[in-house]
Image (cartoon, rainbow, N blue to C red; front, side, top):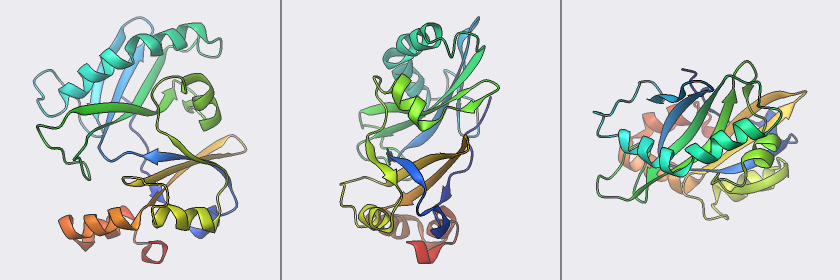
Length: 211
């Protein structure tokens, strides 16, 4: 099953690009594959498959099926641009109120929110199309649409928007999708306190000057 590409930290060359910035939810990356004949038949975390004996992540599948399965299949079958596509992979975030950096609290009420969809032989659906065709479902809030500016980046870092972790910034250059992340300083500080500076360096691709 297709995995989500590694999300890299923004750099100065991204400033000036047109983008959509989505609320980056703090949880675990879950993927689900749909086949036109077999329905929903594969489930996984970022790196491993999920079965009904996986007590940590199987609840995410139950939430997904109750919340999204019928509505997504309706889009796949009704939208002309998807009618001839055999498979899709759904990427979503699984989280609770106290989730942090992929760690969860057992007693939390959990939720799932889809943040990207990969179409077979085409790749991840462009953000404008994703919003148009799937925005009526529960997707992450759009924090910004327009040019990526230094001021917006600073507003994210200083958490002007009341974010939990930061934003996923998505755009398209000549139909080539690019996706970057920007984190709030509050979240970076929590990561350093809880997990150490090595995790901060890994998360920001060693771009200390960008924090």
